Image (cartoon, rainbow, N blue to C red; front, side, top):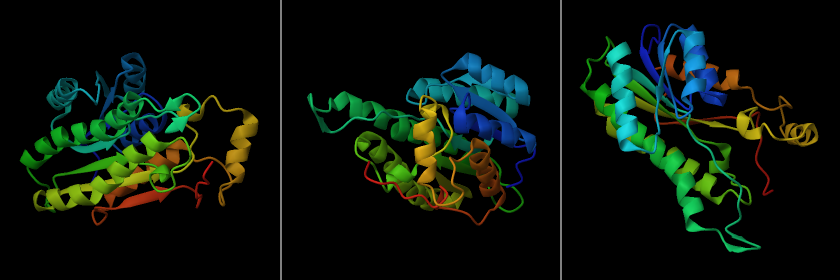
Amino acid sequence: MDINGKAVLVTGGASGLGEATAVHLASLGARVAVLDVQLERAEAVAQRIGGIAIHCDVTDPDSASAAIDAAREVHGVARLLVNCAGGGAVRRVVGRDGPMPLEDFVKVLNLNLVGGFNMTRLAAAQMIAAEPDEQGERGLVMFTTSVAAFEGQIGQAAYTASKGGLASLTIQLAREFAQFGVRVMAIAPGIFETPLLGNLSDEVARSLADGIPFPRRLGRSQEFAELVGHVAANRYLNGEMIRIDGAVRLTPR
């Protein structure tokens, strides 16, 4: 897909990997809609890149549908959806105070897995109804998973399950959407410099970096964003999850 001039949706685009992705895709000529619950921050990003900012709660069907429709009114049908909205908390399944409250597990799954599926079902419906390009492609959906989907650490049950669900959905949706010329891909970041790690001390950050074979540092958001751009450009990438992690394999703790 030639991203230049294409309408793009980036969820979680107000910060972290989403912000870097929005900035990079805009630099390639895309018309970017920055979707986030943090509207003021989304507006700041959109103003910087010449895009638009729209409030969007990915877990809410009405909010997600309204956001996609609002972006379409300005930019046209989105040909690329990058699902970056997500999060998680560390909590053991059975801790000192007993079993994890079920609502804590459901909350993370709802944000990461259900939210990603919600945005995908709505955006893909519009892609499928749109005209294909000269090579028969109508669109691309991208998920942000995590290496934790495969090497979940102690305390990451909800996060691991939610990201593993997205990884499994990738090939299933790629098969389902193939007849329409809509690709589905996923990227699994390792340990990246994002707001989720913003409260770590320098000592802990160095310790994490020392466990990464090469380059021996945390990943940079720009590197994730550049991979998104490459996946969009390479039409033969479909139904696959790409790790971007410096060859790290997470330990149990």
